Length: 229
Image (cartoon, rainbow, N blue to C red):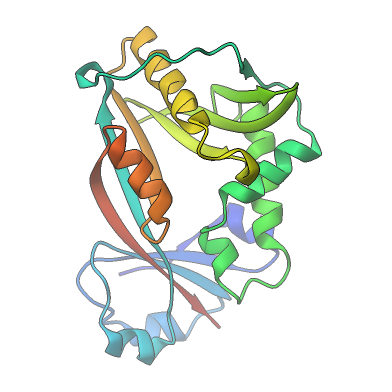
């Protein structure tokens, strides 16, 4: 077991951040407790015991669910898409929607973040998506010329990946999310790519139900703990 320095997180948050991938257990107490990191992310394929959580004062920040679907195997409605438009400019409305998308983010639910880390991180995320640094496209759904939902589409691990997807809380239950998802499926098919992936949080029951109902299945679960010093 080793602590891997996360230089980007360290520079961005202004304090030293590291990462540990837990293989079997947290056997090296000296390593975890005697270091100069303020925050360590612990990634585990299994939930850690209550004893270990209490011993190290760990915060269970996320039960990250990776989902996958094969679009070639799906039958889905190609709903009208005249309201869909590629977004190229960042504005306050888009940033607000981005914050809504992160309601269950570990950077939002962990009370130890006290310097608006969540807002800063998600603002950078959407800015880098719009400028194609971490996404190929950002597709918005417009109502009366206002963006009320969007999806970011990237490519990784031989699949098209949904980075962020959100519909404004005042416009939900109108099948806007389904139309955004249909766009992603059609885009993947046009690129002759079979798989589409997305990540959400286990506690985000609405998102989990939405993805499962639209052909996704759970591919992997990762437990993420935060160790603060």
